[in-house]
Length: 259
Image 1 (tube, one colour):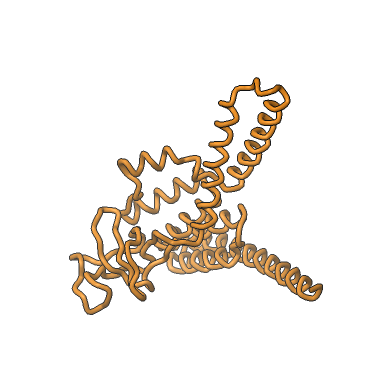
Image 2: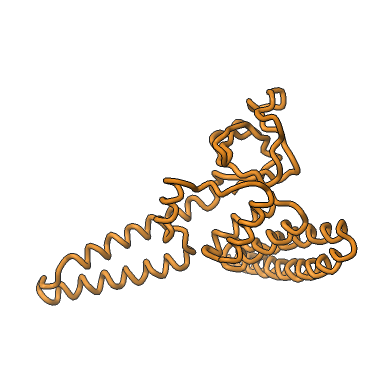
């Protein structure tokens, strides 16, 4: 057991050292790319892509460092002229950096350049705004949950001590909020790795009318990098997707990134 624990600690330490080394390398490549863009556009973009890959290698399993690494990777991909991978990184980073104004602005800019729009609109957009608290960082929600839990027990004990004279309303309200936050955290835990949306990451791909290359093209023109969608069905290595304009088609799994 001691050997197993020591091995796990050694592995975690090695992973941490590797992530920091990749992060330092990514920062260096990013600085080199910024300088190269002034004289050699192709070399600058290539260096930005290398920096993006190094940032991805520095992504940790959880925590704010994960969000920052993904955000930086998104910036590097965007500057390398790859809107699809940039959007994928920004969307993942938003889970760890909710409400970050710089991330939101950069994502909106890349979407504008790629000709895509955010999916939430109309009733869905209203629901998204009403459920804004659910999209806050899980650490903040956990802290509020712990505070409400202690407050609820405090009110309940005070009511018992006063012989039931304290109104039940505050206790019931605290209980309902505890249930809502508990459900929100459970949903985050279960849904974190359950991809139901995605983005095209290759330069262009034909949307098909069926799950194979033998089917006709669904549209007159191919989909470009940065086209976002929701997943409706999966068949082997093909996905039936709904695009932001409401149209649907089948896409090969190799041409997209899911989140």
